[in-house]
Every structure is written in structure tokens, then in C-alpha cells.
Length: 157
Image (cartoon, rainbow, N blue to C red; front, side, top):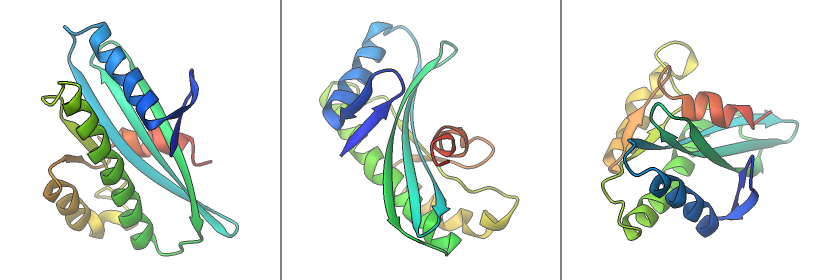
């Protein structure tokens, strides 16, 4: 499993976490948010899933990494949203454990879900938010879910 950094290129999970931890320790007096979000796009016979990991230095920029997975074509929007959410939870759990191992257990991870109160996904909000909150993470939906709707979406095209 590898992640792509727009500035550093391909990194394995451990290298990505080392970059994130160095970034946080580089300016420890700042406040940080760690955000995980996923999005998907159907192309011809496949569905491309992007999961983004963003470390936001509040008021002072951010760094992000993303992972691409390809699956068979998933036509059902409901299935895609649930799979996106499960990918975010999987990566979020790994990131949380790595942060805790580095002594940064107080840094909470947010999961951004690509659903909103308008459009086709509004009927799924309660279920996917429950899935995220039940897993111990804070959930954000559109328009606050920029991790999924902006950063991950940028790389699905």
C-alpha cells in the first residue's frame, strides 16, 4: 500500500506518517487537524477510489497524500458511498494508531464523507455518519467535508 505526495512522490505508509509527524513537530505550537476523506469515479469498466490524508496546520497551510484503488465497476451510489466510507475508516484507524505510537494521541482524526443534505446522497447521511461516529471518529459532511469533496475528488478524474 502506498500513498502519493504531490511534492515527495510515492511513499509507503510508514514514510507518509514520518512526513506527517515531522510536519507537526516542525511547528508544535500550531493547532492541527488530521483529515481523511475518500471519493470515487466510475470510468468505463472500473471504479476508481481515492483516499486522501490531509494534515492541516490551522491558519498556516496543509499537506496531503492520497492513495488510488481500482475496483470493478460499482454502479450503485449507495455501495460506492459505503465503500468510500470504509476506506476512510481503514486508513483513519491506521493513521490514529501511528499518531498514538508517536505520542500524538491527542490529535483527533476527522473523517470527511462525500454526502450532503442536497442531492442523491441525503438519504445515506444517518447511516454513514453513524458508521464513522461508531468507529470513534468525528464525521463531517458536505459542505464541510472538503477532504472528500475537494482533495480526494481532485484525483479521481
